[in-house]
Image (cartoon, rainbow, N blue to C red):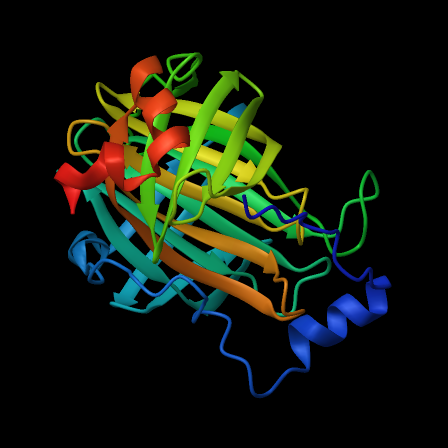
Length: 288
């Protein structure tokens, strides 16, 4: 059995992190190691503007100039940023952008349901005093679109719908399984290709949000590795997702890039016994 241990990455000072984030002229953070992504969506360009009301009556304002350029109102000033947007499900869109020259380095990702007008926001930053300067921390919050003064009182919410489920996912060029063990953690099992070739199993902090029936936001931090944050919008009806990673990668470079889970399958106890005896393709062969 091939067994590997994923070691914590080189630690950096806050100054070194800022140098990686802002002074690397070669690296494109929007290109990452998982080489499959959905086509970009220009749906928000058609919307042109979004005003999102969050807790306490605060509001975020966005203008979408084209498929990759937005303006957003931050601290009384309009800022122009590169962004990426993807269709996660019918009328549900996932977009994200970094904050230029912010300290600490920050990123915002959102799941926007244009049907209900509800929004889940994830604000992330690199550097957290509870961990290390290279770890990414994030905070999920909820809001609603202001459509000419009409604002829904409903909100997305955290959920325990995942708890007790196990899924196999194809992401990039690898298969892995997720054991959703409780509302705050999941067990991430990265799989090899032969019988008994499981080579990495780690428990990582996670959050789960219900957007609507069969549509969920899943967010986690890879604390056993480089400390990056992942977030994606999962469509259980199709067992696929669209998401992104943000943070300092295992290659010690800034990454803020999208990915998609191309195929997934819920695993029974018998499936899991067969998987560990005969390999991952014994239970996902029908998806290939």
